[in-house]
Length: 153
Image (cartoon, rainbow, N blue to C red; front, side):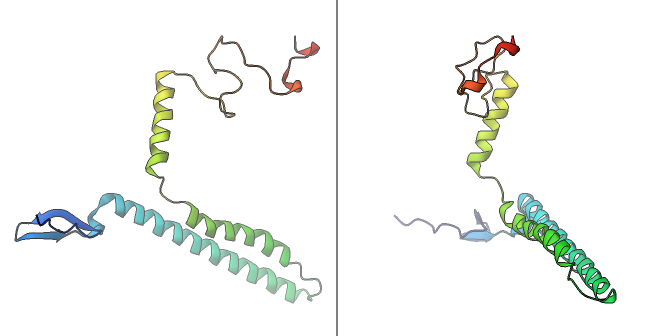
């Protein structure tokens, strides 16, 4: 039994009525989700270019002030290093700000549903300290300094 070939990425899996058996090409720019994602990425890149441009202009100005004031100790290195770190982190953020995975979305949706239903909240330490419900008995303290002392009564 011959099966039709699977559509290539970016192609509409529905057949084109003008050409039976041939998938119709779909322009990815027509997908609103992809357009929104592309717009966000392009705006983020433009923001980085602006940040880098301002950084270079200010560092050029500070270096010119250093030269005009007679040189000597090259003090512009300190603002260049501090602000340069911020520029590098901004560049790195363009890479790590990806779309959330389906697993992350599902986990967050479950947390939101549990919160809306008023279910038990888990503490940041994995729920080891107690249930988080009002009136519930607290769990055993993990460390001696977590136990109530004479002044805590």
